[in-house]
Amino acid sequence: MFHPICATCGTQYETPTPHPQQCPICMDERQYVGWGGQRWTTQDELRRTHGNRLDDEQGILCVGMSPAFAIDQRAFVLPTATHRILWECVPLVTQEAVDRIRAQGGIDLIAISHPHFYSSMVDWSEALGDVPIYLHEADREWVGRGSRNIRLWGGEEHVFSPGVKLIRCGGHFPGSTALHWQDSRRPKGQLFPGDALQVVFDRRHVTFMYSYPNAIPLHPDAVRTMRQKIAGLEFDDVFGYTWGRNIIGGAREAVERSFDRYLRAIGVGSRPASSHSLSLERQ
Image (cartoon, rainbow, N blue to C red):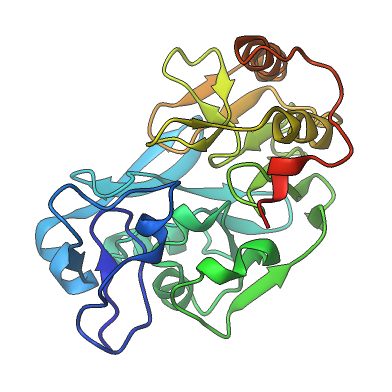
């Protein structure tokens, strides 16, 4: 079946018609419609113009696209002590990438931080052996292509194993999720926060936005609540959403400094979150 992919955000849709009129993700104020108007592509078309970029960062295989396409996020192959996890997804699936992942041991499950990175998650799941896809239920309305492999999880945390869990950070989307990995293979701890906390270009800080491309800041209550949710986590590194956007070493302290800096910059200080946390959920 024809499954169109938005050329601006990279999201794949179920629609049986050749071209849906609009991409809901791009119509939302957190994203944008391309300046040339709505454009669509497919897996077959992308394979003629693009390939999967496969690079190692700090001992982790990362999968992206070359040349850059749409948001230009990368996926991570995380060989934790108990599961092999594909964290995030990208629009293009190639046999080269699937073979490389299988050669390293395959994948047990996929987990994704938020709707902007759902992309071609169903194609990836099927190519890797119909593995389950974990998404937070608060963002279920943004699933563009359904699958029996999708597992919606609820609450504030989902534990895969001791030392590996998903944390609902909220903020950017109601279900925005970070993955924390701290086990025998990564004893100092690493945080993979998607866009809930985005590593900025100086690679010494993170920031927090409701919309990154449209520069809409995140409400201070949402930022304070996020701080509370990750307060007990130990991590030495933060891996950002795209290539090179990492904080390697001292990341826990860098994130704390970033919370303080952001709250000072918007003029509210770092007092505790209010009870209503008005903008965190956006429901």
